[in-house]
Length: 245
Image (cartoon, rainbow, N blue to C red; front, side, top):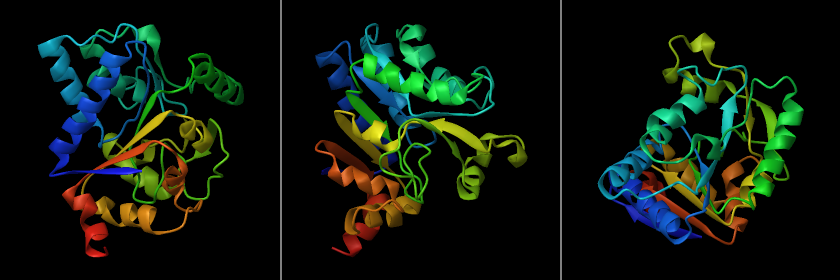
């Protein structure tokens, strides 16, 4: 596991974007795993800026996203389909049919979970998976207590996660209670994983991840068992780790 220090959020985002761009240029048919939420927004902004200035092509790239809310239409402003189009897909040359998210409006969600697993496998697996981390250690929507052997599945969102995500909704009561998420074992099959961590609110969980034994109460702790993980963290996120070294 490699830890890369950044001065601040923007430098963290730049470093992540440069890593992704290098991968895309080296492997034009890259399978790129993507995340949503606040943390990767800056990374996507830098990718868009690069496309505008350098025309780095994504025509042969496939993307697979970690998760999507259950019961939210793809076109809804708070869906992750919309998030990805707004922050990235609409601003680069990737064919939209090569961008993949779970279809959470499918009539049979269990079948959809299986379809998504098979999709990733048929693409040859994820070459580079981008992750954020929740303050409780979740990756994707895999909350504390999720078995490390889990595959893509329907999950019930914890109250803390719904509260954290309420800022994206007009009414906090509109935050969905369920989502489809890649499982932990699905994420761990990725050839390379990049975990982005920013801000003082993430300092404690990053310290726990790195200092405590691997356990299912801190889902992200499983990343220590992956052979190719890079953590890009800013100084605020690294503060507790540095204090205790």
